[in-house]
Every structure is written in C-alpha cells, then in structure tokens.
Image 1 (cartoon, rainbow, N blue to C red):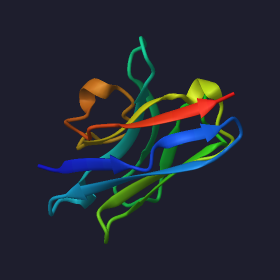
Image 2: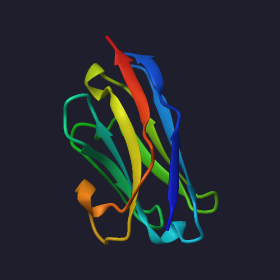
Image 3: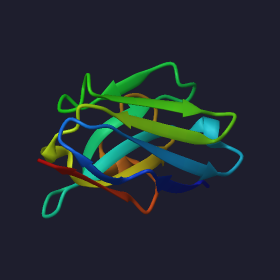
Length: 124
C-alpha cells in the first residue's frame, strides 16, 4: 500500500510555470507506475502524464506534450510534474496516483492509490 500527498499548486498567470510534487509513503514505491491526472470543474478526471517504475520512460496526454515534464526520485519516494507555458485551460485539481499495472495506463480506474489533489489555477 502507498499513501500519496501532493503539494505545489497555486495561482499563476497565462504562460507561467508551476512544479507539483507528490510524496509517497511505503517501502514499495519503486514497484508502482505513477501518474498525474487532473479534473476541472464539471468535467471528468483526465490523464495528464505518467512515469514508469524506474523513471526511464514517460508518457503524456497530447494536450500537455512539450509543456509538462514528469519525473520521479525513487530514493526520495517522490514524483514531480513540471508545468511550463501554462494556459487557462490547464486550470484543474491535479492528482497523483499509483498503479501496479504494466504498460501505458491512462485510465483512472486502473490506479489504486490517489492523493488528495492540489488546485492549479491559471489566469488569463
């Protein structure tokens, strides 16, 4: 089992940057694929990015490709999401999540563990 706690959200202007962090508890952090999701008001939760167990491979939603970078540090049990060139449509609550499924796993239902979320607001 793993517990996840996000931090780093806030208010930023169009074109700005934010870095989200997610700290995990548990001895088996390295056995999980870690994903970032977001949910805007009135919309379904959507996939943003994921990083594999070793950190050697990443995958992004088309809407954030080239602007967001996901990384992890297994020694520190953390995963981060660097968000650059932010747009108002990136406004949402951002969640980190963990899954033991292999491969590119973008469906929220396949993630077993979730953080509480952190609000990101991009003003125009």
